[in-house]
Length: 432
Picture: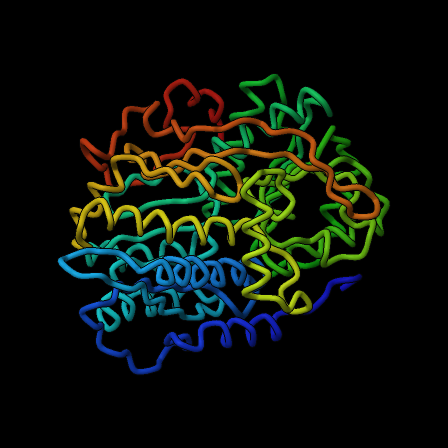
């Protein structure tokens, strides 16, 4: 695997240790919910293809809950309550997410469910959670178009990640874009957002290709990119197998600049692959341990103090920032509502909630759209795999749903929207 490091087993072992006080392994008998507990049920793939990306987030949930509990907990429903995190391993298997979501809702009596890395995992879990009228959070970057009363999203949207980043790439690298991505809902949507950005900012999508999960041999695609000669490659490669593209492309002598909204930010490939596999990569990141914010240093210090073994846990990634933040956002919503009752909590969330010490900079849940405003940063990676801060692309708002007339405080449509649902952008997709 040309420099890849296999950390899955050690990561899983450390997560199991960290969650020793929770029902971490799915299938264990659920303990009855105590009157003085608020239950967060967290399902993440801490084994399998997506474990490298998902595991840091799982740590962050427990860290945030411990901080809140150590400060006295939350006064709701007439008593002081502590947060209990019940964690399960989704094993990078979609069907398991469906089963564990049911367990969270009906056995663990969760007050909120956090679940999933990929869009397929997300939808398997989310359907079960919202069917039970329980609050669901997806704490990864996402498409930005899901409009559902019980669903909330802490991560950056395609509008926030792709539009400013592709604009920068077109202006500074060149207009011709070759897009490759995983063949599932998120990367398909990122292809739509990239096409939108190209049309808005004077670029051109010269090719757009999607590949099933598990693809690890990339020579045919590398040859095609070399023949096409785009100005830059846009990547939405997901999982431990897909990112084998990078050492293979480097070995084939492919030097065309790359840009990605998932590489580095989630899977910290600059540490996992031998240089110079990621040379000339640009990465869009809303949080990682490299973002230059005042809150990030103290956050990393607390994280490393709690989880000090860097050989097992080498990088504090984007998901960790989202995971920590969403626990604090829910705590604030419960505090405002004075209860953990679902409808009252949703009303509190829809009043906008700001977490000023989010390690990625200012973070505000926008209640009208159930997505968060946050900063977008651009980094470059050199031949030695050093990350260099390129630009703060701004505090970016998730306005996409409002732009097409959706306000969840008035009515939640209960469906997902894509860029092609914006009438002004529909012409970009004619013939698609």
